[in-house]
Amino acid sequence: MTLPANTGVKSNGASRSAPARESFYVRVGKRWLDATVSLAGLILLSPVILVVAVAVKLTSSGPAFFRQLRVGQFGRSFRIVKFRSMVENADRAGPSLTTYGDSRITGFGRWMRKTKIDEIPQFFNVFVGDMSLVGPRPEVPVYTATYTESQRRVFRQKPGITGPAASAYLCEEEILAGQKEAGRFYAEEIVPKKLELDLLYCEDIRFASDIKMIFETLAKVIERSVKPQISLQHKPSSPQSS
Image (tube, rainbow, N blue to C red; front, side, top):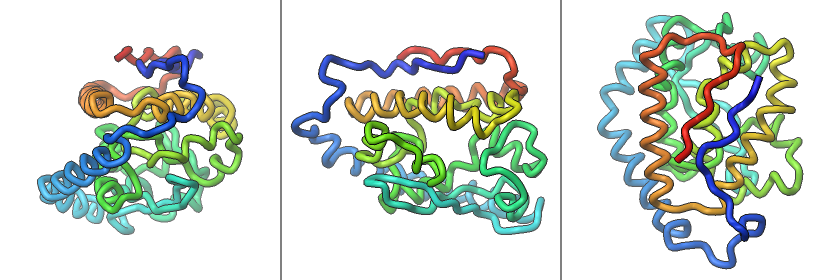
């Protein structure tokens, strides 16, 4: 099975070293965009957040929100927030990885994960400064502990709700469902490829690229939401180049 390897993130001759001076967008503008969009999102989507939170509570026992330790900028830990899509204490009843068809996923949670509605609460993480709208996808400590010195350069930027790796592996659960040893496959095959994509992004962050990534991700989520969800035991479709 061939994994996604190209999301349109382009490298250049100087991509292997950090830029001498970050752009105004990276230093200031990106945070302004994050704060403005995340606040607007929390306000405009507050009715949706309320309805979904109530639905989570009514359809399964446990809290409406799920918080998990992730590693962010400069290697600092933070709690990522999502709508709870699995049974209560699911992390104690099975592996940290979730694959398509996992019995721990609730009925309502399955729909939320397919439409990515469970990710909406991460606007809060963006607003308080733990995350960005676009950036490397944050991992749990068990995987970041294995990063090489070169791979740890990904911690120079804030993790994002979306990004090149997150977009390329939007169907990650389906890919993992076709593996006998999902945990090992994820650590040895998927994580290095995701880091490669995210590191390229970190070396060339631009306003136009971030806006394009946001809209491309929205388009992919909408397409995913209206298509039947199946286990990708065959070759997954390659993401479109940007």
